[in-house]
Image (cartoon, rainbow, N blue to C red; front, side, top):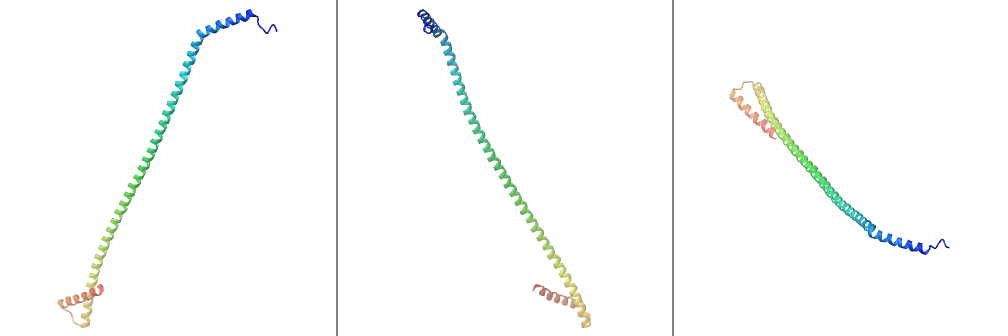
Length: 166
């Protein structure tokens, strides 16, 4: 057991050495170590604060980006819709103009047909009248004077005209 329990002189020297070393360490080593640990803690705290500020700024920028993207999508859909409306309006105008032109062409064609029909009917009536006068002259056996001929034509044209109206 003698080896386990130190001698009193050794114990006293060890205690004094420990006390001197503790005081020297407390006085000279501990303040710089404490200062270094405090500085390190401050740096870590500052880094954490900066990281939090950066995270908040990044979230703000992300939200701004999302808002801008949503606005851009909305604007693009507005532009597309406006383009569709303009195209639809232009199509309607073109169709209306084409219909007007078609109606105008049809009206002119009808007028031309009516004019041609009137001319053909007048020529036909004149030919029929001439033939009728010639036939009537042969049947009667005499030639008609110009005045008789004109009166007969007028009478016949009036009769044919009244038949066309019915």
